[in-house]
Length: 323
Image (cartoon, rainbow, N blue to C red; front, side, top):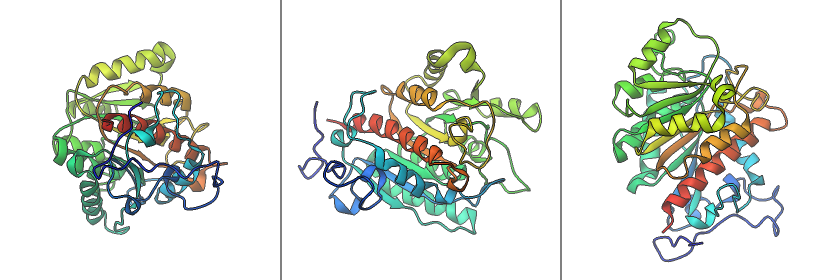
């Protein structure tokens, strides 16, 4: 296997060795990777966005990044499902958290966009750990500045294309309406996956279609299975660069109880991991995992799921950066 050589000629700095330092010891960076300031340069960054001022039900996702990092201590260097060594393929770093205003949503969106734009300079992929789903909008703005409109694959129980809540245009239920209106996404290449549960009105579905989305309902997993779902999504995406946004509530509450708006009848962890692995030959230009709210978690079930989803995304991103 080729080993990525970063820009100063050195080889990537990987994880703290779990056979020399117990995995429960030391700094809690994602997967025990180096901090950004510990290496001269990087290829892929993981960054926390501890923001949840856009929630409409249970709060607490501001604590999601720290809980995901804690659960990620269990991750090891080799990913057998993708036959890859992600932390040797590229220099992956934990870039810490983006500081953002917890009281002013518009100001926070600007701060998040600026922080991500700096990390994404040169087209580097970034995985954001939320935080609530509001943070996907500034992430897509930053991606658009680098790549233009991208295909959005959105894993969620909910559409998140509503117009407002109580007159507020920026909440965790509105980011993809705003993204479509701003021209950040490819309307012919974007999809929701895992949608289920109640809606406000039948018009919600018609509005969503007009905004450029196709919907893969969660109930379709029973009918066509993981391979059928993946085929539909990849056909939709085509060869466009992809941004992947994962609301952890796309998983059934049995697999992700620690979230703000749980819905019965969701995906299993195994199903979602399998679908993500299907993107191994596609260019993932950015991603987020959001809505992990540890106050409602049990035995870190939700955080462990999120950490493993992050691992699959990083594995694909790192392979893309390998020389």
